[in-house]
Image 1 (cartoon, rainbow over the protein chains, first blue to last red):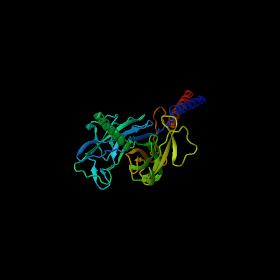
Image 2: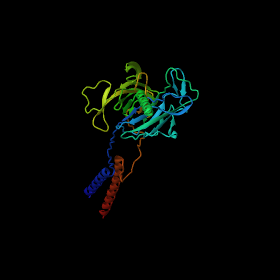
Image 3: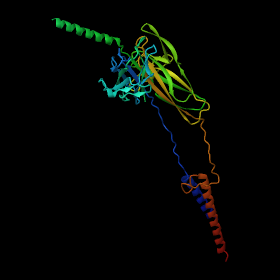
Image 4: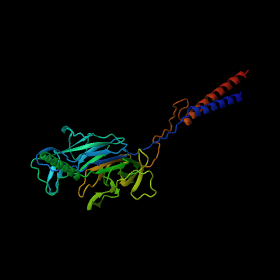
Length: 175
Length: 244
């Protein structure tokens, strides 16, 4: 009898121990995260530069640049979304003699995907902040955008003496 | 006859004028390429982060002079290598100064990386065709302040502006692009249990539960008590049976 009781006791305890391993087992799956970074490539090429208006008389408006239009090309290796922006690097043209020609209401740009001259309504005013050119190119595989320029010469604008009025502009390719 | 002669003279003048006009405009291609366009790092405060920015000029027909500036981000100590400096260039016989960090000459994709690479240069894999792009490298060192707040993200934007010469004294519209750098401050890895659960018996998720040791001991004790009780009861019955 005592042996039987001991046997049953041992069996029950064994079952409980084994059950503990099974029921309390909390199989955790090891997790590892795989990651990769693909670097971005982007290039911008400007051709037909040196935006030139030639000689303009004061009091004339909507004067288009006389040289072939600026072309902004995004390189075919570009693999990121890209906007083309233009920005004037100062608030006015200067002629090296202290004379200035303010860009506000006078200096404009328009972007097109073709060589057709933009309508007046397509032109945007140059500013010192980045302004997105309407013909933003597609990202992958590159593309080209033509940028046109227009200039008004206010009445009684002082003549440029030492050198022509010039301004520096930046065309940027960004996200 | 006279009229025809006059027309042809006028026509010739017009053609010559247009030729003259077209000759005064120098057709130039100024190009700037860059990679990568973003970078990130997790560093401890007090560390100096190095970001390498590569520039290339595959589509221009002249050298692009590059200057790099930070356009947004906290006022941490930042230095560039090469530093921003003035160089002298002879443009069509006229010596002209240019401020830059570095200059990238126009180049082409190569099929193999040369065995010897000059200092400041490198080659990166072309992303969409066979070959490698020659690049000039700019190093940007960003010093994270020792008292920078932990587990914070600090974002920077760097702009690279490229200028090209056309004729002495003339600089054409600049090309530009940018790179975003994100720095997260961190510290050494450590793990510490915050709440001490002694005295609380966890019996969850099953008969015995997630906590193997506690559950097992509890059930073991209960089982033992039941068994001992049964044994004692059976013994009592046995004694009673033999009491005649």
